[in-house]
Every structure is written in C-alpha cells, then in structure tokens.
Image (cartoon, rainbow, N blue to C red; front, side, top):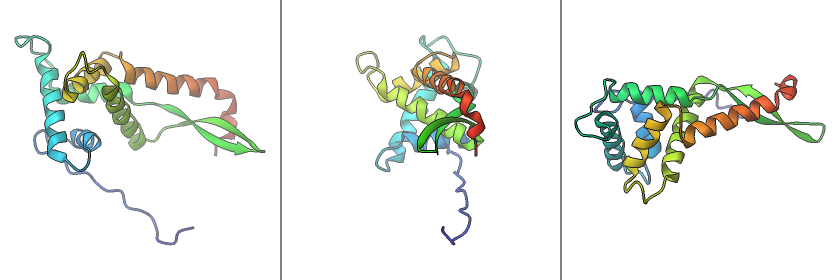
Length: 165
C-alpha cells in the first residue's frame, strides 16, 4: 500500500466564455494532443449552434448552458456494474455511481457518441457534438442508449447485489 497519503482532487478552472466548470470539463475531454484552443472553438461553436437551432431565425428560449446541463443530467447513470471475484468466479455486481463519476461518464459518452456520428451528415466535429447534445436534451440518441444499456445491465444483475463491498 502507498504511504504517500490521500490524493487531493484537482479543481478545474471555469472556462473563459461561460464561466462554467461543466463547459471546462467538456473542453478538457474534447481536447486532443493538448490543443485547448481548438477544443474551445469546437465546444463554443456547438453551444452556439444549439441556441440557433436548424433555422437562423428560430432561437430557443433556453440558453446553451441550460441545454448542456439538462442534456448531461439526462445522461448521468445512477447504477453501474463492477466485477467482483468470489470463489473463482467473477460476478457483475451492481453499485451506485459517485457524483463526480456520473458527470465524467456522461461527458465521456457524449463525446464518444459524437465521434461515432457519420461524416456524410455532419462535416465537422462541432456539428456532431451539437447534434448529440440536442439528442441527449431530448432523451434520444446514442449516448442515451449507452446509459440505458448500463442501467439494463445493472437491473439484470440485481441478484448479485448482496456481493457489494
């Protein structure tokens, strides 16, 4: 066991435009090879596109931060399964998800779903991200399906809940 002590959780500084830690987390997860300004531009364009909608004249009443936070709230899982070895067999034991992990999983699933979207329909990543955030806001899409699959797996393995540690 390590004797170093407890690891302090690093606090992420809010992003410069919206002053939101949630947007800063999203930017940090979108970032590739340390190119933060590129990631910021992608996320900000996606959030702008959410507000403008399909038509330029049609402006939604909710702001981009409200849409993003609602979408991520819809994506946050409550339960997940974790493997537990007992008597030589590995059981998938359902456990509740910590609050910080919920947010991390929601952001991760959102970005993965955006990356999987077709390049024929959406030319740039920010368009894919905006579409996936909109889908999550409406409780549809690939990321929501991932959350439902995780919940279904936890529900299916409810019999092993007594193995919780």
